[in-house]
Image (cartoon, rainbow, N blue to C red):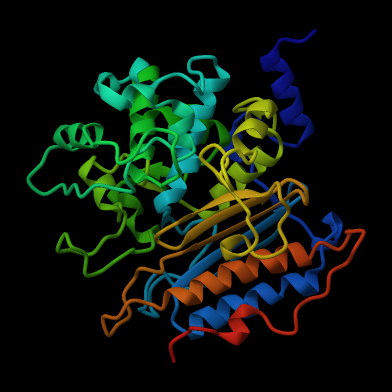
Length: 413
């Protein structure tokens, strides 16, 4: 039998992919070749442009994939409200992913360590972090952090100004529990940051170094990173102009806690292109493997993406019907959203993924914030259009008479 590395190389060659994963890109394919309707998919342009006309965002990148190919990969608008700025390109334009960091980086790092038998889900956090060896915190487990059931608050006001990253870290670790562990679910940025510290304690590497070497580099996701260098600023969509830090945020994490932690945190800080996230989504759909490169086992992907607590999986959210995943994704679909205007949804039942990246926080020229309802409706519409474009269903569903973007309910004039 061939050694595992040679088997991986053989699979890569069979897939028309050289040994260097940076060349293993998803290919654009005709929608009908993967059982999808091109006419229906074209409705994505209509709703994306409706959002642009309503000034819900200066630009947006949309990627839809099925059966291992890309059926829709388009950018709309520009990086900011200046019409002379660069047009959005889903293969080049990088966005601040905000809370997508929780799943693309932090949860994935935990999956890798779990897969390597270096952690167990029911391990107490105190096994790895001394700060959790006192009081009720001794009961907190890795699983509870992933399910947002550790008893931690949603966030903590920690600002970088006047504090070192080491001080910010100590403050996060010292955050008191607000209710008993495993008593109820409260979405917590603090919990995600603690998970990031666990990754660092177990691996002996900083979180950004770990995911770069174990995940992103191996998948050829060369435009996915924490703390992007200034040389990439021209490709990065600005997040906010009138920030509390007194300067525009472009290539600098928007989240205050992640900023206080030096731009590398379990809850936020990751930047990426829509095209890179498509590679990640395909890896998840393929059971932890991409073009012969295995990141985690298929059983690990299944475990972490299965509904576990309410509508949450381990780190991931599942589609409860509505919001950013739309109305038609299956019960086994999973994904996440980010505060800055980002989302990813993966539906194993349809073998489909939908990625929408926008910078909805970027102020209008008059200083007002864009209306949040616009992007909320557009990304739900995109998810619905993608699912309704599947043409090989045993039951073909009708397109609605009007999309949310057409009805514009709650949109300001």
